[in-house]
Image 1 (cartoon, rainbow, N blue to C red):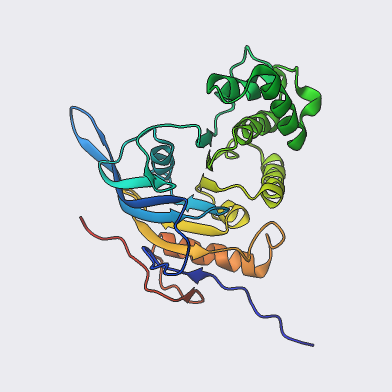
Image 2 (image 1 turned 30 degrees about the vertical axis):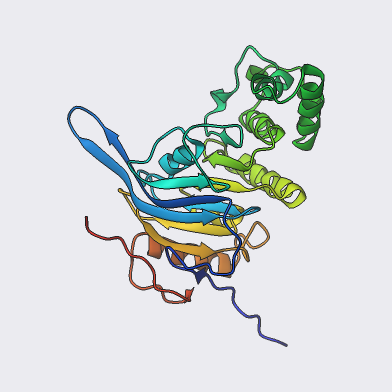
Length: 290
């Protein structure tokens, strides 16, 4: 009987030279983010760089306070970097735009006075992209995609947490953004619903191949959702490494290889011991002292 070859993590390293690859859809270059008050300045991230290519499921992974959500908000145009730059399709990101849509963690991101269908229609109408009839047709299409076509006329307070997140995903995808930005969208869900939502997100991606930038502090979720993972150090967030993780997913969750990869990523995030068992083709960028 042939011996099964264990699956290994390929660590690309930070700021890897990607000669031969197409230009990235989203480029974050040497981005530092700071929050200022009268008393002090807090640096959330320090010179973070990464590229997201069209069709990527790119995950920002790190402990609480590492600035991963701030990086996503900067990509959305909600926060301006204190240094560095962000480009989408070769154009600088200077503010929010309909080419980037965010799905947040909170369940109250849906206006409660609007029905499910009206919530999905709202950004289509507000942006002037579609007329009412076309917006309604598209809203119903995407509600069908997420399994909520029977709840089009329901109000958000009648929905479960998982159903509310499905509405938020339908609303985002109906806008057909260049990048779908998801900020820990399943963190507040129970374990069974979270697993179901991960399955549904994977199924939607398999069908549509949209570009995803996803934030999580769960190593297991990063391996399930992402095909590429950027590891960020504890505060202030610096790049530890970038990992190709396309070989893992829901199909491998719970396997020995999956559990081993989870432990090795944990060790890299917190610099525990060495990175034994991790396949590397470039040195890792370790956190530097400011």
